[in-house]
Length: 235
Image (cartoon, rainbow, N blue to C red; front, side, top):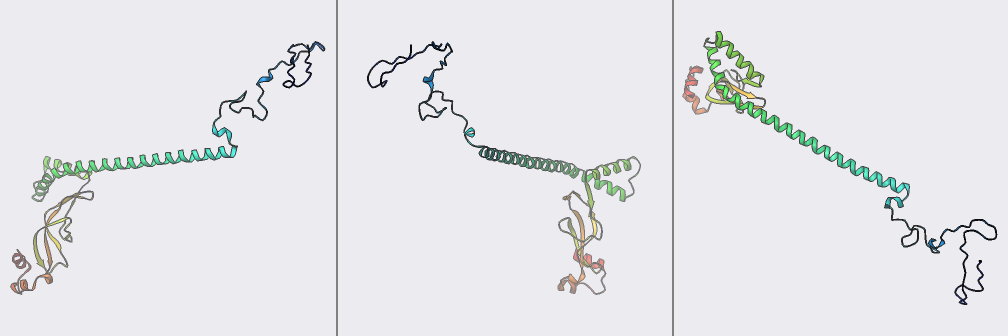
């Protein structure tokens, strides 16, 4: 059967008949039976929510053009790069701090051990000056000195050194015409240091020029007195 509308579908109230046969009776060809009821309403865009054939919402980046996507990717790359650089800087600072603390702890331990050995080194020095350092005792003493030197122990304090209160401890003081300034004229006990750290100051006798002698003290010193007499007076 064929549709034979005799007026408006909604106007005159007459029935409307639709031919849904799959084969056209006139030509014998198959008809397109696709359901057109799912077609979007006039003015509606395909994929719009609430309309037939709508697709689920897409990622916002899919709704922008290639230039905008490239800008978003570039910004994300900058943020990740900044995070990586910050983490790397924090790690480098942490490693430096750990290495510095480890080295400081090592020097502290070595310094404590060497400080306990200073008395023994003093005994070795006195034995050497007295000519008693010989035989097996000499070999042991020299081995001990080599080990302490290898650990960084440095001996200082020589006769004629300029007096420095940071590394010298003055036990005696006198005046002499043979010096131009405060000078260590006698080493009573050598000093030792480890790196920049002074483990023990050198104990010395200090002499100053005679012109620095106070006026009242000069009057008490006879003109013919020697330097030894001046030393005794100062003592």
